[in-house]
Amino acid sequence: MSKLDRRKFLKKSSLTTAAMATWSLVPEYLRANSSRPSNSQYMGDFAAPKIENVRAAFIGVGARGGDHLKFLASLPRTEVVGICDVYEDLVKEKVTWVREVSDESRHTNIALYFGDENQWMKMLKELRPDVVFIATNWSNHAPMAIEAINQGAHAFVEVPIATTVQEMWHIVDASERTQKHCMMLENVNYSRDELMFLNMCRQGLIGDILHGEAAYIHELRWQMEEQKRGTGSWRTYHYANRNGNLYPTHGLGPVAQYMSLGRGEDTFGSLVSFSSPAMGRKHYAENNYPQEHQWNQLEYKGGDLNTSIIKTNLGRTILVQWDETSPRPYSRLNLIQGTKGALAGFPTRVALEGGIEGITENHHSWAQGEQLEKLYAKYDHPLYKRLNETAKGSGHGGMDGIMVYRIVECLQKGLPLDQNVYEGCFWSAVAPLSERSVATGGQPQPFPDFTRGNWKNTRPLAIID
Image (tube, rainbow, N blue to C red; front, side):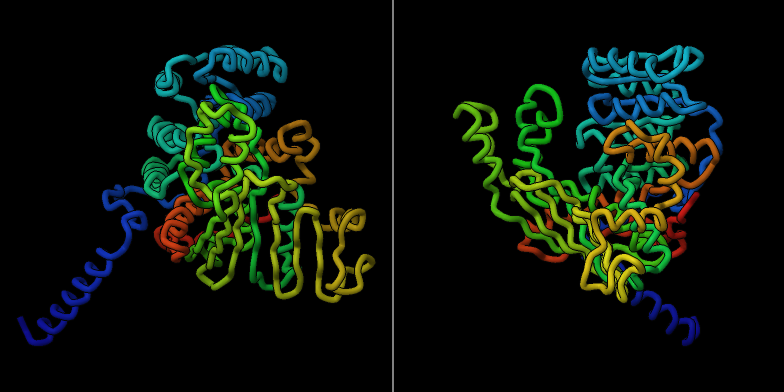
C-alpha cells in the first residue's frame, strides 16, 4: 500500500470509526430500520396507479369509521366490499347506512365480519380490497395499517397514525417497500379556515413565516361514561398511564402544512415539553363515581394540560398545546405568524401590516366576524369552493367529506395524496417525543427524519383546483 493510499485508508477508517461511535449514541427510536429492502421507494410525492373503481373495506365502524363509510359509499365508482367491527350491531347498522346513500347497482355484496377480534385479518385476506379505512382504538392503528399494506391495500388510518416512534418506522418501511399509501386521516386540514390560511400563506400575504400555534383544547371528561364500549373505555387508560401531548395532530397538521414542514422548505428539528399537574380526571372520577368504581382505581399520571414547543430545521417555532380535561371552550389555536402579518383562529382573525383594504387600517386591528366575508370571497381555497356543497352534511362541518372525496379522487386519477405517510408520522411523533421530554424534565428530543433526507426534494403541497 502506497503512503498516499495508506493515508486515505487511515483517514477513511478513522471517519468510519467516529461515525459508528456517534451512531451508537443515537437513541434507538431515531434510527432507520437497517433491514429496509433495497427496492423501497420514497413515498413523498408518490402517485399510485389509477384505480377506476375503488373497492373499500372498513375496520372499526363506530362514530368515525361509520361516517367515513357512509360518505364514501355515496361517491361514484366506489364499492364497499367489507365491514368489520367487534360489535355485530354496529356492522349491521352500517349496511343500512350504505343502502341509504347509494343506488342498488353498487355495494351489492358487502361481506360482514364481527365478534372475534381477529376478524379484520380474515377480511383482508379474503376480500383483498383496494383501500382500507381504520378507525379503531389507538393501539391497533399501526398493526392494522401495516397488515393492510402487506395484503396489498392502501391504508387510511384515523388519528394518530401510531403511538410509538418504532411503530411509525415500521409503517414507513412497509409503505416504501410495497409502494402503498398509508395516510393519516387528519380531517382538520380540510376545514374552511385552515384551507384559506394555507392559500393565503402560499400567496405570501403574511411574508416569511416565523411561528405557529396549534392545539387540541377539548373537554372530553364525559367520555368516561363510556366504560364497556366506546372511546372512553380505552382512551381513559391513555390519560391515566401516559404523560405528554397525546393528541397533537388536529392543531399541528395545518400549521405544519402552512410551513411546508417535511416538504422541501423546512422540517421538524426538536421538541421540548412540559405537563401541568394531573388533577382534573382524578377529581372528576371522585365526584362522579363510587369509590370502588374502576376509574377511582387508576393513578392518573398524565398532566391535565401539556405545552410543547417545536423548533424546526430553519429555527422557526411552533407551540403545541393539549388539554382534554379542563373546563374551557374548544380551541385549536390555529395561529400562523409571519413578517407581514398573522392569521389566527378561535375566533378566526386576520391582521396584515398596513391593514386590509376596505376592512382595517393597520395591523393593530383584527379583521374578524362579518368583516371576514370579504376575505373568504377573495381567498377561499379552490378546493373548498369546489367541494363544499358536495361535502355538506358530512362530519365536522363538511371537512370529513372533503377529505374522503379527495382520497377517492386522487386514487381514481392517480394523483399524489394531500398528506403523505411521513407527515402522518411527523405529526403523530409529538406524542411519544413529548412523553420522553416530560419524563426528563423538559430535555429536548430530536425528531426522527422519517424521510431519510428526502424531504428536501419533496414538493410543498400545491393549491390545487
